[in-house]
Length: 378
Image (tube, rainbow, N blue to C red):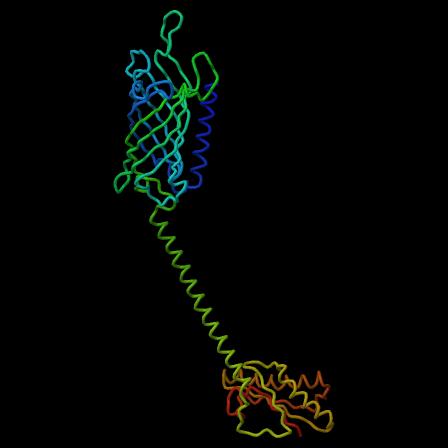
């Protein structure tokens, strides 16, 4: 029963070790975050005894491994004096595996460096060996081995700029879990003792150069890469912000132009268009007839239907933007676009329509008005 419980405690400890290191294994090496400490103090029975009168000295050593800013393991061995009439210098040895939880980092986020003062809760099981614990019937003294348990607190004072040293005050309660001649396990106050100790701990230097647990990225090149990525993202975001502002300014300008067009009269042209001329205006670089221009074509079609002998010459023009070759072809396409609507939608005979591209037009004073097709009837 004793061996089974100790084996279970060991398996649980190894499982905790694996669970705690998986998340940071790419940054924290196995040799990191180790420390060693020495302790000294006294133990005294928990019940049915005067606190100081029956106290006896105890001292020990511990080996610690910090697995995360919150969780760590401690292998501790404490030796006590004068528990029984024994010839050994230390007649009781308690070897324990303890789990430690840093309460500061449980309730407050770990900021990458230990605080000056921290509180840890600890608990675990172990093996208690006592020399000459009882006398058999033949008068021979026998040693005893028991399962032990411990629960307590560590009040830690982390010293120095590097936090390499810790002074700790460690009040705890220890239990002898089994009695001689019995195999059952229990937490009995009559088999428990106060253990009041203080100690000093030295934290070995890690691969990061620190004496304390460092989580996250520790390497200069990784930090530089992260900073470069952040700078790149900031530049990209700034570029997108500029593009968004420019787009918004363009939208505002277009909206203003639209409002101006709605609120002002059409500017007079340098050439008066007679009743036998019909003007169709196009957008820049486009040969597609807008819906707003269809009434002009509709009037022309109506005239041609009422005058069956009439013919029409459609001249296409372009504004000065672009090169001459492009503007020539654009003017031709604009004339053909008006013809296509007359033939396809209004069923005007194609032989009554003549088209020609004039390139850049100078009919109107404002260059943008020269994106047009001038339809002249005869």
